[in-house]
Amino acid sequence: MPKDNNFQHAKYTRSNPGDRVAYLAFQEGHTYQSPEWCASMGEVSKRLREAGVRGMLFINGLPYGDLFGVGRLDEVGGLKRGYSRGIPGIESLLTLLRPETNDIVSASDTLKPPLVNSPEVQKQLDVLANDAGNFSSESMAMFQRAIDQHDQRERPLRLGRFVWSSQHHHFGRAKAAFDLIEFLERWAQELTVSANERLVVHAHGHAGQMLSLVSNLIAPGESSNRQILFQVLAAHYERTHDAEVTTDRLETLYRKLTEQPFLGGAALDVVTYGMPVRGGWETGGLGHLLHVVNHRTVRSDGKQWLAKMELPQIAWELPLVSGGDYVQQLAVAGTDSVPGLPQDELVNQELREIVEPYDGFERWLECARRGTRCQNDGSCLLVDYQVNGESSPRSHLFGHACYTEKRAMLFNMTELTNRLYYSESK
Image 1 (cartoon, rainbow, N blue to C red):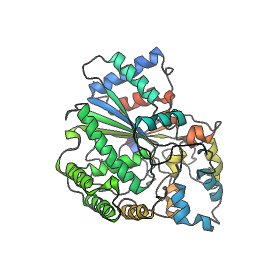
Image 2: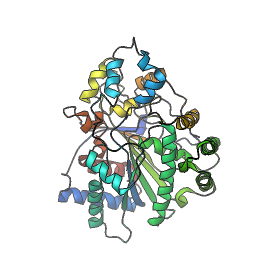
Image 3: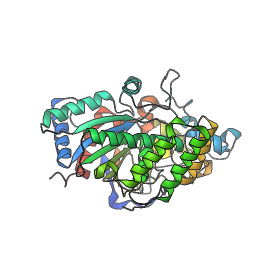
Image 4: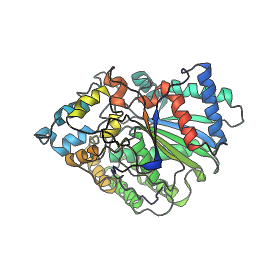
């Protein structure tokens, strides 16, 4: 895999990923919480531990909100001024993408970004979403029990949970990336992770965008854009005295990232679920990289690695979830939430010039129509999770909720173990 990405944006290529991609049909297997399920999860954990995995961190944010990033499209694309006239089906599509009209967001929802990673917020997410786009505490506890029952070694595999802020814009992702880097350093110390061991991060949806940014921040060696990014944030602090990006914090982080190996040299493996293709990955500081996408082949041209993006057909396909994960397909370059404060929008624009040159409605439409499912780097699993549109969009998130559901835990863990650690655990 290539290195020296230096914060560059992913390319929207339609070429065949070749042997980097595999196609699977979801199989639920043993019933969740059954003795057979626990035994199988225990066996998976033993294989992971034999491969050197010391801990696995599961990350998600708020599954309800502007998941498709239409706030930015409406603002910069001029859609409210009739910019979209003459594009067949676009208004029907945007109605399904906007949070106020797509039946995902409820007026009674109390959680709003930015979220904080705390037990209280995790409990609120569990009540609000259960396991739809949320790695619930119940699921994590059940998995940990299976580990503890079937792996009696002195230092068994440990699980963790992290809630990211869910601010879907460049400034929000940068602050969240700093939070995660600091969390991982503390967690690795608590677990006494050594240089020959591994940590695995599982990131659902837009949390993957934060991880792609982290991959560029922790890259070994020189990085001109890393230096510029820190300078941009330092200038923002001078203007606003934002307590989240103080000069002291920025200087401490920069020294750690540039003067010593991240996590003391332990490997950081990343698995993303339903991550839209946007930020580019820097693989120099990562171990394994795997992307899982809910995908159903609906094309007639034989290019099974691509999603279908045709207007106006997609407007009636999306509620039926006939093509897989539509958040992954449509929340591409040009989309985002809009920062609420003018000073935040200023720094957001400055960061956009570093990490994402694609801006505006036309660019979004061009990128979305390419139907790119696989990231430029890492392995890719295109899985038909067999989601249907019979229930409400709030329950399936237009094909984006399936990865964190309890029914998928054993399948996901088995597949990633087989594909990333088979040779290492033999």
